[in-house]
Length: 172
Image (cartoon, rainbow, N blue to C red; front, side):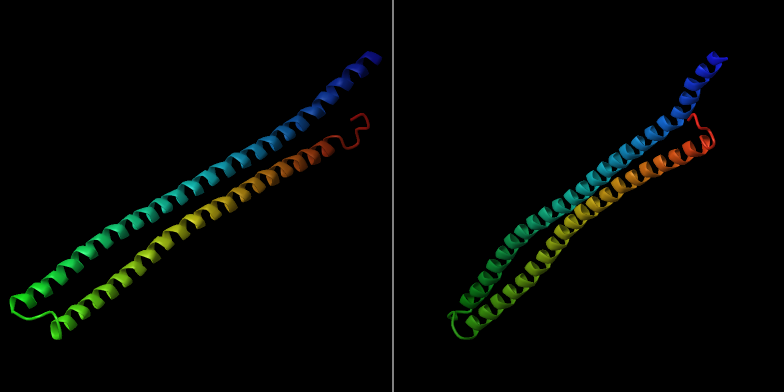
């Protein structure tokens, strides 16, 4: 009869250990899944941020092209006024000079407005990049916390089940 009790003890221990091992495995799996999810979210946030940064760089290139076009148009307008004045046999003083100055002033004002709009557009893109990085980091942190929370929940559930299984069993 003593043999039956000794054989039952290791089997009871094994039966109790299997759910505990499963609970630990589930907890570790939850933590790993949370970590993997966090890395994925972080990578996605960085990718989105890089797209915004590319957009900001393209806007910067657009400004360079716009500046070149402005300089060409400004030179063309000046040349037109000077040529028109000289073609009429007038000197570049008085009214023709006032027209040239007024025209140049207006073009510089328009350029300043265009530069301002491009700067806002570029800053918007850079802000989008920063936002994407911050959101990715926050979401990654949330996913890690979710993994730890699920792991804690698994351990708590396993402990509860273990306690219920062994209730009233003094050998466990």
